[in-house]
Image (tube, rainbow, N blue to C red):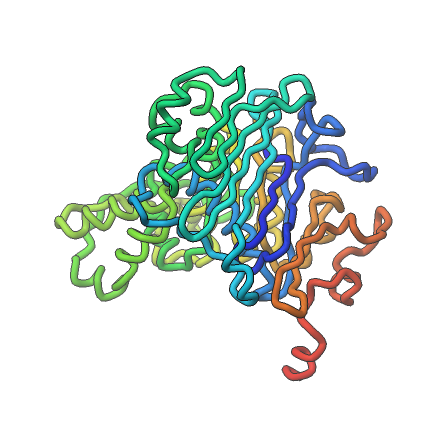
Length: 430
């Protein structure tokens, strides 16, 4: 379970900024809180939603978490000798290029809190560390500064051998998992379990639905039925898609997916592309909609709404991993979705009945209706805004004095919490 995440000198984050899913002392709704004895108040939040104007840094926050995950899970594979680290330092201050980017996370795994982090320049990982807290006291597992490594007594395994195989632009944790380090592989698996569900757009959603037939489950269909009474069931149909038609419509998506999309989504995309190029049929997911006589009429994905496609693409992954207690990142939760549908997604995480294993959600959104949702506590609401230097400021609603029962949406739209478009922009548009 995620407790806290901190980042500095990454994209629009210049100064250290922290997102916390630790429960505050507010006397808000307690139903749906995730029991976590090591946490300060014995529980953590199931979800956090981040608000702010366009280009204020909401997506960059998720990108920072994704960068950290990918550095852990992939640096041992992609770190070519002398290839450097593909970080993205804050660009609006020339001095930032010479400073390290820092990523740090506190999480609980198998009932034990951990603190892990690293610092990186363009050329190398400058430092890396991992501590656990088995008895509420910090215990060093390993620490790295440049090419020097220090190991705690409790870290068993071939630590020195792994350190000798760790290149300057790869992480020790990443290499340890590759070498089947028993203790550290569990920590590696925590990062691997983080699920990034980007807003890919309707074309990508369409092919995600086609290629993810194996994750279109009865749970997902029941969810769709709860927000659309016309949905009855689904079926998988073999369909042939001519390669020339595919290339005409989806052009450069192949190369984009191959290089940019996360493995959870990228692999099924590549699989569908390969089948189309070889002239083999693909399985198309068709929803059965209730007809006038009560029988289902099955529609191809291209005839479904953008919102339905996105729900199928995103929630197929959510339902697959909800029972694993994963951390989910969803950019633009409200994209193509009605408020009630977006709130229904939140409800999946904020109810112990649908979230028995303590999965967590971090989502960005512009849907202000959710601010007054009974599902959200005030400590689950976060804001981003840019300062005069173009750097992102991240802060929770709990930094501002509010009372239980306040009209949070109205106050936000009135600008009382900040994180709204500037008055100059509104005036210009008027």
